[in-house]
Image (cartoon, rainbow, N blue to C red):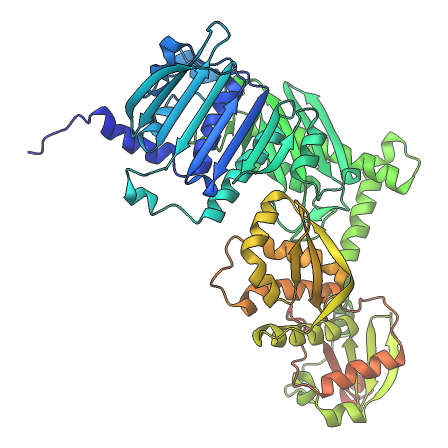
Length: 583
């Protein structure tokens, strides 16, 4: 029979720390939450070496009494819950009472605090969960938590910490969330002695400008809705400003930044008809709801929540965002509306947006047209070589008949060939860039006027770790100020105006180190080539047509676009005659 052991505090604190304290960002999250719960209006966060060497949080909250200081580091000790009933309506950010005990058990910590009723501050020093000293010293009202040498006494856990840059990015993400969720609080964020954020604590829009200086303030739509006990307010971007990933989306519920698919889905659905696939709106949305109707206790680190009535919340958020978009479109298009025509207008705008996005599918219409004419099945397609590749001899012998619908090129070499001008150009652009990427030899051009790319702090930090990858892509950039990079060289195949979106796409990848550059860039290159290629509906000259065909003649190029659609469909004289019942 195995003996059951009752673990002593120093052992179960180490186990508990694994759930609460995974990395420096978890320490920052727990301590700043305590600062805000203590009524702080000013919070300073400092980290060194990504927080691995130092994390310090200083606030002007109400502090802790000298007689209570030791209780802060006891497991399951909290000032925020008294009995079981409080769990059903949690109104504070922290509440479990595990954080400080867990942090102190795996670090060298110092807790300096003073209340307004005490003349001096109390400084408690704890190493590995053991009290080293307790003394009095001077300090203004508030608390400073200093955490050094995380996991110094648990090397097995320390080896699972990520790189300094990755840990720094994680802390930065936490801080940006606090700034957005608490716009009335003054925040200062310092990394290795350098001030990264200094927010004076005023309005949400100013907080957004501090965190996301790359977001044009003129593209922000003010969102407000108060219905059925649910208040929604904040900002979403206009349909003109989108991002290639969801990193610019923030959801705040009762002052807590959370991941919530209900709210995220409602916003993205509202934008569904106004943004293209793969692009996402920016938003910072705050939801206020009775704490009894939201469960914040479903995740150990309180990252996720659960609404008791998610459908209600989703509907209110969706309607609030749609109202904002509606107002934007009314103003943008200066149309006189009455209330009964709003829905009709939005549906019409959605139709035109969808039609514009699907221009590249126009070739399907002409193919369907021939299908309706009951084109006979041909067992062995004539001009098979044309269906696969277009050789030099074929190109030189063709006679260009012209274009139709400003979309298709008609050529005759004894058979009729209908070439999709967009798909053909897209294929050539894609093949050339993929060859350059695989050869790690992308032709670049120096910009006469360097292009400034404004980035969020998170993106700035990510760029630092991806400079070599971007250079392999033909993008040469240098730091320019605190929140921007200056691009000096770009790939010749890509227009300078499209570089920022390519950089954003690369930055949106979770982990690109170790991946083949050609594989990494494939989808990005397809999207870019699709964007850069001549469009359906664009007028092209005879010279452009000749150049396009000659470029195909010089390459062994498959006649399908990177998406897999056919570039050319061909009809022999016999096939045409059969379709019109001539034979």
